[in-house]
Length: 390
Image (cartoon, rainbow, N blue to C red):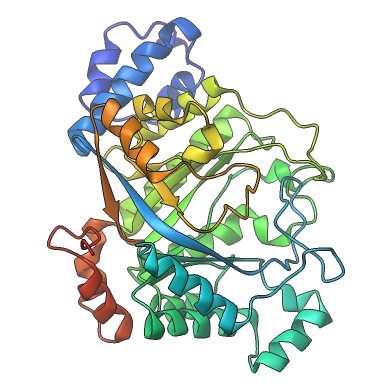
């Protein structure tokens, strides 16, 4: 580490794409305050070289298919037990109602978020699935993706938690892209009282196995980091490096999200400190320098009101923004209005462009497959792979 104490002229080399490995990345993520402008400038230069002048976003509806979950993450306000107030599993009619309402507002993505395999923990969920006519939550999710594809112009993107290779294949046939946040590679967060205590699906090796299964099947995949939940700055670097290595091997990671923990009432981590703005900027900037050309997203609603500062750290995407549905994972943080998002993006010298749930460089790969989903994708995408204008 001593060789990086004084970065000096290295900032110029970073700006033109100097490869960043673990030791240097660990030094950069602990950049001193007086060095932060140079870190941001280097990350911004790499972003402009790889994604010049453009910031993308996806106009979506958020479909919380079920908030029952067998995991008890210390930061989560979304999950419910069956007996909790607000516990709910959407019916097919509710799914279609929200999807059609979003379609009228110009949405092109149906984001399915749900708890991880709740039927394994709760007999109530098994009974609900039985009444609906499905064996498991993933069978029901598959059917709801098919319903949205058949009845609307929206394209599904599913975040169902851990998936076997078979379920990656099945859901990849009805979704142009899939997602699973790695969150962290730190096993320390599995200890009693830590963020992932009582969360069997948050074991890092299990999550990496799902991400790799998608890579082996060439399915575009979204993943990322959740920062501020007890991990170290070195843990953040390690997570970025393992994501980069998986993408180098398989070429399938379409997006890396850097998401900041937000405090909420009535969660086990309600008194936990949120990551500072400086931590967020450093993590995003190091993500850009480590990941190079890969797509990097940071949610604007979690950094409001000054979310436009994230543009200086090298993001090239705002993620999904909904004109209809709230962020059910972070209900205290409303989406920015699209007109304001466009105004702030333009003020930073960038053009805001509407993408689909699958990123433009992956569209041709998915659209070449047989079936209804690729057919819908070919209709939805313009010649650049972005969302076709209505």
